[in-house]
Image 1 (cartoon, rainbow, N blue to C red):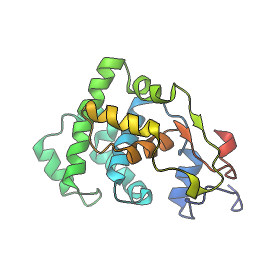
Image 2: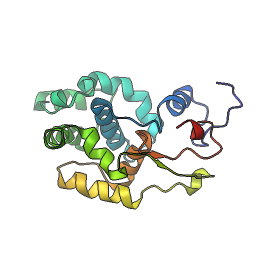
Image 3: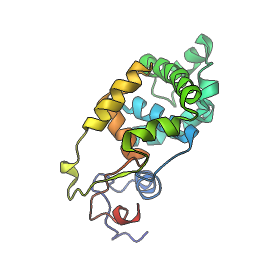
Image 4: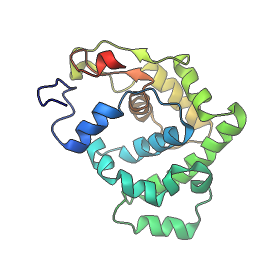
Length: 189
């Protein structure tokens, strides 16, 4: 990508961030395992910046069974202790335990709805919401839809799924296009 390409202003210059923005962020995602990965990583991000999580993403993939929820749901107390000792992860016991709890809740949704994809995309009627933000500061941190998603996910047993985390998840997996209108990715999604 040419260095003069206009991107969302939050991207900055870190190559990992640029790659994530240019190739993943906001692209509609329908693969259950990848949706689970983003759900876990967005919860891990709470109180941190996304670049911190991105830099640890490969470590999370290795430690969390490449985000296969069937495996994460079965993590034992011994596995939890090893995760808490892993310097490649964000060693927050509440977030680690929530990831396991969320794997179990995720599998219950798959059992009930056939896939997590069919459940989660119902919040946007199966189609991405296309916003038209001109400036990053205009983009909300939560919306009525993310509030509703948060309430429903909590009722279904999820943790670390507040309205802001849900909205960040929606942005990441392309349920909403929040690239600013001057960003080259806006028109491509």
